[in-house]
Length: 99
Image 1 (cartoon, rainbow, N blue to C red):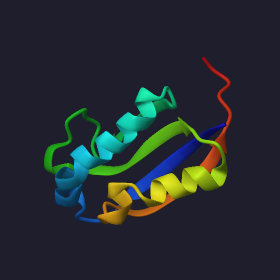
Image 2: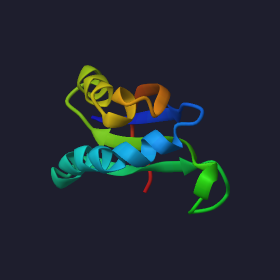
Image 3: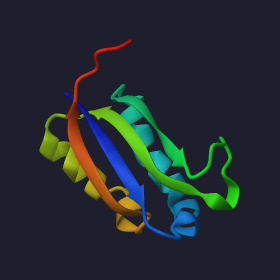
């Protein structure tokens, strides 16, 4: 089943985000290579594809996992969680309707 993961950045987390981004992308890449990622990306703090020092407000991942618990376990081990980029996150089941 698909699950949506919504991470909300901690205030001032841009420097940490930049530092651990490669590890975060590597981890998502494993899911992507297995064909399990529907979409993933950051939410810029400004209306721009390059928010610069304004940074990001969080990230969204929609990916396939065996269960809600598996999705929660996966995100709990993500570098954005363990390094403190996300102040909070939520994981919810997701049903794709379109396209």
